[in-house]
Length: 234
Image (cartoon, rainbow, N blue to C red):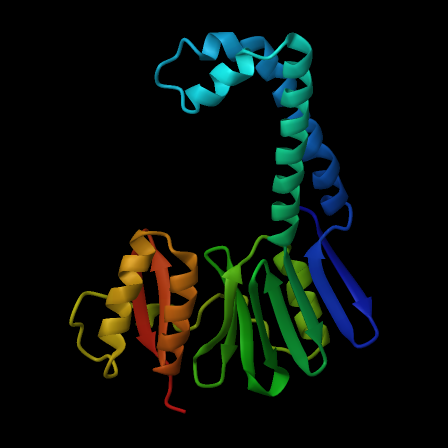
């Protein structure tokens, strides 16, 4: 999506273009209303598809008068589209780069780091990572903005931009139960996290990742597998 980079005083904000949010708030409810309107024409046909989910709701819908079907279909579509639009906007990434601090926010994920603690920033595998001096990751979140605008904002405020990606990429090893070289307790946390990864439990994944960070272990996920390396001791 188009990316906007704005400066206010001593800060620069890298985010989606300002028109993206209103476009979602307008377009998705209209799309939902259109789908709801279309449902009135195919509801009877859907009831003949045994495999189609929500058959009970569809049958109740077909019991309504044509006028009520139209009102209900469009109304539900509008509301569903609006809910989806708010969710999409909530999940948009915003990176605020200041002279003394960098902050990242995407949905419920919020991380910040003082400039003195930041070794550099890079984007790799569609994720932006703020790297600390102990080779630990101070922030790591999905990235879909313009990396050139992010690089310019970082350089303008004195942060190191790492254009070649993760300088420690070669150090990662795939985790297997009982892996050698890990700090005490890390294998148990990685085992629990593997279970959360397979279940796509985002809350547990974040909580367990924080525990691993406290143990000095950096973890990346790929295809439901965990790859790890060590950070330097505090």
